[in-house]
Length: 156
Image (cartoon, rainbow, N blue to C red; front, side, top):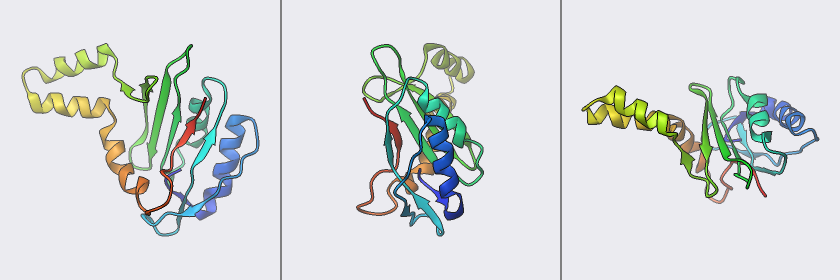
């Protein structure tokens, strides 16, 4: 959780815990990038699809900035969800090393839309990679020296 208003922190814990079918308690820290907000990191484990459940439980909350990552397994691809108040949710499939995977059809679409316009191709590929979400979340990721990078992620 990159940023949550203080008043929402207990509700965020409740929503994430409900998505994981267990109670959770986060260790919240002040988020220096936004006065009055808090940040946290929580490592979790669960069945495939848990990342989507967590992101769905938190999406649409007007003031939250968060990321959820679900590692790939031998049976399934991983995923990464990013959310900002202004942009909403972005989802990308990830491989076993955590890289975003852009499907062939999405690349072909970008090439078709761009034609011979290199700037348009760059715009389409940035969109496919969620660059706007990364740009908005980056100041919140590294706002306080010594604080952990604040990603919700699945391990193992």
